[in-house]
Image (tube, rainbow, N blue to C red; front, top):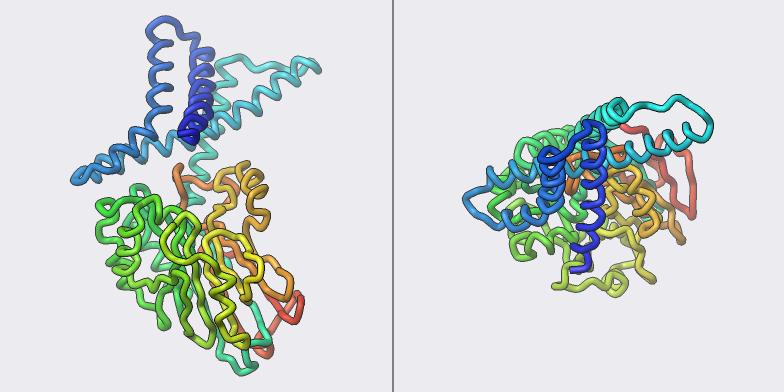
Length: 385
């Protein structure tokens, strides 16, 4: 209840700011003014209304259309608020130092057009995740190790906004990388079953050489855990819930997200059971390092790098290792995906999504190394659009 109250106050404040700017710029009074305030109230309540509508079966097209309106407007309202604050700061500074002052109507037009341009940029960014290539060498892998190519996706959030066409494009791009396996580090889905028709079959049709593996995220719990587990199984993923598997010369281990109450989550105890001479890759949704956990590489997501600037600064206070590759004590590594999809507003501003190709090799395999740390060697190449 507290979350919804805080959300209502913050989101309602942004809607009130936008409504006030429109009324001032257009000099609206009477019924016109009340209409604008009514729309602001409706849009403030619309996310809560959408949560109730999501349960309706047989109306997925209607609900998805409404979701596009609700979340697109949410993103635009935030960008308008952000740009509007920048304009307000300029106006305050202009008064103090005697700079030219824009009128209410030109200022409103400039703010609204800038917010729209940022929204379009953010939409394109969200629909076109970058390819990140990361190469890691380890002495625990033999020099003649043939190498392992892991395609990593995270936080795809399949559901009302991200559906079949987006998934088809994603799988085509993943297949073009020719990975040995596909890994999902949680939040693969973000909707009830009737909004995911046919998506598991699309995923099941893609079969990399060594298979597909996944762990749960918090949104698997929100969508309904039993339904989420069924979706993963039908999609051909092997879920690692406090379990491990030996594949491709390494050991993959995975744990549930803390939001998923069922299943074990103590990775330190889990990893202590594994042979010390095995190269261990831990799959864990949140980029948090458990005390005493013994692994060589942890793959995580969850942060979205904030998804929309400047939320990244707030997220970084909770998850300091917010994205990319981080060296840990003992020569271990953590890689945090910025996420492949988007949650809520279908935009990403200065926090692009990603598909990650991780290449593991023995110490004799890499041709160009630029960093050495704790007995491990690492090379990361540039981004590809």
